[in-house]
Length: 317
Image (tube, rainbow, N blue to C red; front, side):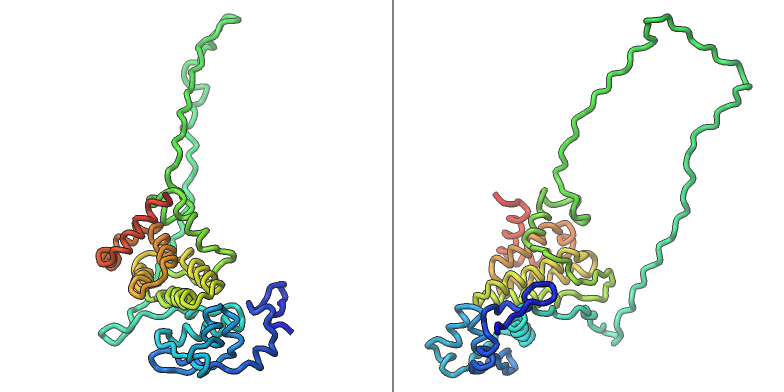
């Protein structure tokens, strides 16, 4: 019996196609010591080896980790490794939390009051303009009909010259990007995001709600997958990140959520492919981001970020 079975939709519930459950259950357990708190996780060595050649070497090779049946990953946080285990068994993982985090308590010890948006005022429909009322035909002198001889035209019709319309230099597919960015920039990002389904993401304009942890969890999964060569997990995490960035309303205090993601990816640093993916989104939202002082400071501090942003704005050469 294989480790993955088709579900009701005909799709696999796990990526471990061809790996029997008996092999997973009977293989020796492998211990991982994760994070600064040294928390221990135990997982089937066969399941770990099935994820990538790099992990197979770790658990079955000639290194001390394989002989001891244990490896220490002090640079990985517990939440990221938990999601990796979930992915190893199911082929998918959950984001940080669908319920977004609440902003920290201020100095007074109270949370900021919720901003209640005023209800939209329903405007009464304006009366249609029907033009001027014609005077009564009985008033004033009657108009005399102009007689035109047969075969003679009263006036030559005017010649209307249609001016050729200029081709629009910007795409309006993204309402936040109508006045900025080169043509096709948003399309390139949407293709890179590979949005094969609609993201389950709650859009909000509430300034208390912080989405940075959702962004970071996908970035951390990508970095973990890149380090151990798990290509399917790299594609999955980038796709999930794209799914939440695509509908995200980058405005007001929520600009800081995306700036937190950018700063993390350049401080670690993240793989170049992930940095370019995030800078592609930043280029689409350059006008909004440049108004944020934190983003301006980040651009001044990081030369690589500045170059990557200019490269995305200029487009493929």
